[in-house]
Amino acid sequence: MLIKSIFLLFLITYNCKADLLNVEKVYLAEAPYAPWAHSHWIWLANPDENQTSIIKLLDDYKSYSIPVGGINLDSSWPDKYQNFKWNSKKFPNPKQMIDYIHSQNVKVITWITSMVNNDSTNFQEGKQKGYFLNNGKLIKWWRGNGALLDYSNPNAVAWWHDQMDYLLDIGIDGWKCDGTDPYILELIDAKGYKGHITEREYADCYYRDFYYHSKAKRGEALIWARPVDNYKNTLFLNYAPKDVMFSGWVGDQTGNWEGLKSALTNIIHSAWNNYLNFGMDIGGYRNDKSKLGREKEVFIRWFQLGAFLPLMENGGNGEHRPWIFGQDVLENYRKFAWIHNDLSPFFLSSGTECFLKNISVIEPIAKKKIPNRVPSTFDYIINHDLFISPIIENTTDLNLKFPEKNEAWTYWFRANLTMKGSVKKFKIPYNEYPVFIRDGSIIPLNVQSNYSNMGTEYSKDFITILITRPKHGKHEKSIHEYKSSGYVVRYDLKNLLNQIDIEISANGNNKYIILLNGINTEHSNCLLEDEKDKFIPLPERNKSNMFWTDKKSSFFKENINQMYIKLVDKNDRGIHLRVKRIY
Image (cartoon, rainbow, N blue to C red):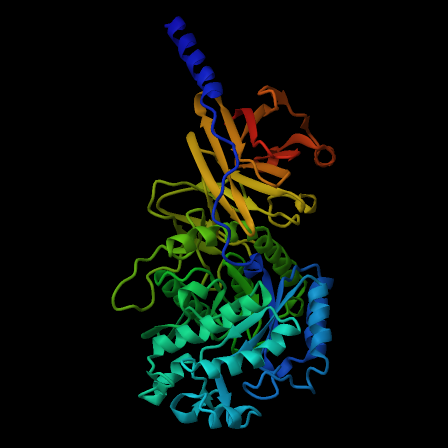
C-alpha cells in the first residue's frame, strides 16, 4: 500500500510539470466600445444646471476624492430644442468648459432628442425643405411642441449632421438620447421621404445615427439610451436597438423605495430582452416628498446597487450630492464609487463576451413570464461571477436565497464568509451590500484604492487578477480589452497536493497582482517559472510595505484570508506561477 501511494504521488507530481497549459499570446476579440462606458458619471437636472454649477460639481466630487469619469449635460444646455446651439446665458463659453472637463480626464455627453420644436431657430428651414415626418406635423411632448426628423430623407440627415458636427468639433464625446421615438405613434400613419415608417424603424434610425455618426467623427463615442421602459408595469417597450446599447439607463423614477423597485423592474426586463449594459438614475430622477428629494436610507441603498451595475450614474431633480446627506453618506458613497471603478476591466470584458453572444451582462434569477410584469425577484448575476441581491426596503436584516446551482458564493466584503443553497439570514450594515463572488471565478480588476477590500492605492498601476476560492481542476477565463487582443488566465488546482498552478498568456501588460481570495495557508511557497523552465521562489513578506517595494513577492493577509502575489516583468512569453501549501 505504501509503494502504491508513493507511486501515485509521483504520477501526480510528474503531471504537474508535464501537463502545463499553453501560455502563448492569444488573439481575442477587442472590446467594441470604450472603457469609459463603465465610469462613474454625474450630472445636474435642468433647473440647477449651468456652466458654473457643472464645473463646481466636478471640482467638489474631486475634492472629496470621489472618482468621476463622465458628466452628462442635461436639457438646459441648448438655446432651443433641438437647434444644437448653446444657451449663452447658462453656458457662456462651452468650449472652455469642455476643455476643462477633459483636462480632468472626464468625458462629456449632452442630452438630445430628434424632436425639433416649432420655436427653434432651425424649425422653419427644416419644414420648408421637407426634413420632418408628415410635413412637419407638430407633436406635443414634455418640452413643448415639435416635429420629428425624417431619417429616411438623406438630405435631412446631412442637414442634421452639419448641426451635430458643431458640438462634436468642440469636443463632446457622445449624447444622452432621450426617449422621444415613441411619439411617432401619435402621427398614426407616420410618413417620410420613403413612405410609411414604423416606430421600430424610426427608433433604430434615431439611436444608430447619433451613435455611428459620432463615432465616425470622433473615433470614440457613446450614447446613453433607454433599453426597456414601461407604463404602469403593464406596457413594456424596447427603445434603442441593441447594437448601440453599450451604456444605457432606465428612468424616470421617483426617489423612494417604490421608485427603486420600478427601476429594478426595468433592469430585469432589459436583461430579459438581451440589452447589454445599463444602469439607473441613482436616487431616482424625480423627487419624493422628503426635504432633499429622497430619504438618506433610500439614497444609500440606491448608490450601492448602482456600483454593481455596468453604468453607475448619479443625477436628477432634488439633491444627489452625497456630502449633503452627511459625512457617513459621503464616506459610504466614496467607497462604492471606487469599487465600481475597480470593476471596470470586469465590466468591459464581460460586456465584450456577452455582446458576441447577443445576451445581457445581467442574468436575472427570475424567469421571464407572460404577461411581462413585475419579476418574482430582483436578484441577478453579472456574467456568471457576481451575485447581487438588491435591497428594496429600509432594513439591514435580509433573507438571501442563493442561485439554485451547485455553486458556492463568497461575500465581497468578508472573504472568509462563503454561502450556497437555500435561504440564509444575513445582516447587511449600511456600509456593505449583498454582493457575492462565485467560488472558483477569475475576475480582472483595476484596483485604485483601499475601499474595495481587494488591494490599496498602490495597486493602481497593476492589473489585479482576482481568483476567489479556487476549485479543484483546470479553469480558465478569457479577458477582453479595448484596442488590445486581450489575454487568458488559467489555473489548475490539485487538492491532494494543496497546490495551484496559475498561468497568464503573453500580452503587453507587465504589472500583475494575483489575488487569491478566501484561501488559507501555512507557510505558503510561491514559485515563478523562469526562461529556463525552472521555478524560482518568490520572497514572502509579512508586512505590506515590504511587499509593495518588491518587484516580485507574496504577502498573505491572514485576518481576511487573502494572498497577494506581485509580478513586475515583461510578459512576452507568458507567466507560469506555482503556489504550494494552500487550502
